[in-house]
Image 1: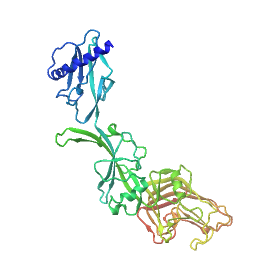
Image 2 (image 1 turned 60 degrees about the horizontal axis):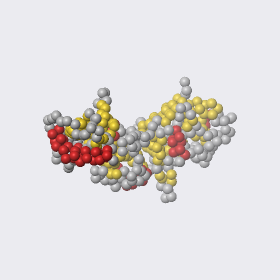
Image 3 (image 1 turned 120 degrees about the horizontal axis):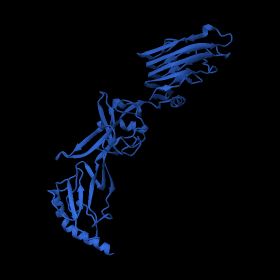
Image 4 (image 1 turned 30 degrees about the vertical axis):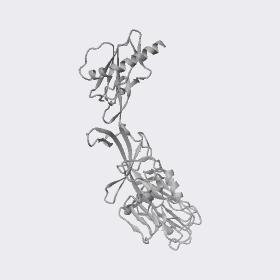
Length: 446
């Protein structure tokens, strides 16, 4: 009880005299007796000074709480662009990076000094006013960057297309929905000619690469080229720094799946979805049965009830599907086709395409080994890309591979084996565009 009384008396006495001590210490230092307590402001300013020194006069054996200098009056300990984060006893500076860290916080409600204390130095810690954002953008028809929305996120956060982000800076916002639903809402913001007919959204980084879902916002630890400083327009003082990472939105027509590996590609084909490649897909010598339906050997759009088509497409984004043996099922024969004839085996990536668009993709390192020991096979067509094509489009596509015959059905007529080695479509196309940069090369193995 006696100790507590001494502490309280010390505090009361000090509240009267410390303020004068601060003012004196902010100017030229003078000689005082007692326990010296130095407050280093570490870039901050209090009463136009960068440090304050207090002297505590204590009777022998007495203890006393310290009083934080910024709590004595209405003046604020401040540092433009930073927020005060407390007082610490230990200051450590990295000799290589120069980065300063603080430890051993001082608790003004519990920590005390005594008459035996020689000197205490406390350092002001500051937290930089640093804000981190993801900003959704798109490029208009002229290639100009347009901002859609800017979202406030935490350092180290992934971009989540369905998160409830807080929109900032008064930019028009994107409703907080799943990415698949955002496209229709974005049509209200983006120029109509850009988004017309789109039903899915794709995300890309500033360099045009597919957005990495594992990317973590770097914040103040990241690339400083993303960091900008905001200032007070009247005083010019720094208010905060911010790091904005831009995400570019693009629209893809139709219902599609992304594919960046073999599993995703096979799943999309099974579901008869349009496909956008996000990376090269390497089968590493495995078998790929292509895109054609295993029963009808037709790869085509889905018919609506009114008879119109929902086109399917493959957009490789200049990636490749490579190193595979083109597979086929010798018992899956085309019948009832006047052009091909009954019981025709089609070995082809796409077979008989109908309302399909294939673009920006290469098929490389392909091997075709014909082994068709099945008595019902009457005709065999080897067509690397497609055998027939109706109302389709092939642009910027290449195929390179090798072909050999291992076994044919007993009594098979050799003239009924047709091998297309150079043309993208074997039979004349109907309402089909074969664009530039379309090549096929099927050679005999060395």
